[in-house]
Length: 296
Image 1 (spheres, helix red, strand yellow):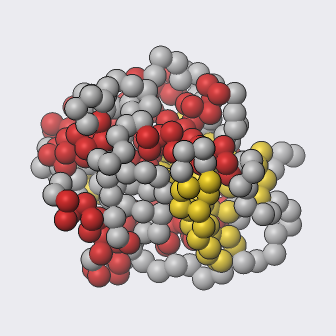
Image 2: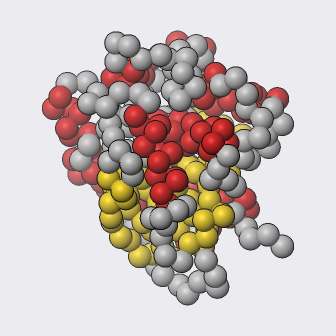
Image 3: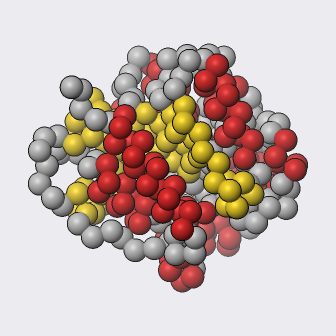
């Protein structure tokens, strides 16, 4: 990507009025705040979505990571999704920012994502949240980060996660999934795009087999939290999601897998153009409400 394209892609909705319209409106009944969260390395931006209705107790947390190939995107471009999940799951949804490539190569984004999880379940927790009921979510590169954070949290002995919602995730930096070639000219994201984003993220010395880049290639997937994995039929990353589903199930991890027929990569960004986006969001909200329910 050229520098001008990267700069445009980092503005809300890519700086494009049609994209802003297609992304849909904020749901009513949600309070939204923006702030910076200090970590050991840097302050990172978050956008917080809290249901305005009175809470019966501390609410669970959904930590969501945005997509954009680890290169573009920001925490503020999915108001319709995050506000809708906050209402439906009665949770505080935190849309997280992280340092982007090519200025910051792998695994910087993954380390930032994990640092945010640690901070937001510790000293920088949102008021009124329950740090013992936390799930992660993300789409595309954000799904990659959510999967990596689940691995890092398990290996570090916490924070414990209740679930992971991975929305058309990229999980294999070696680009070994057959769909990368089979769907090389798919709409929304093609093989050239995938290679360019990964090249920006890895740089000349990055290791695509590093589990912090390729969670599919981790040595052990046992003990990970329950997962919802959604894929799109016309997406080069289709087989990434199906392969990760198989690997998690073989490790004994409960997984719900859904393939959205007729959908391209990035369909979550177009709720005004396709009903599938709202259907998929509702599935995510139902999954999160289930895994984040208080113990009985």
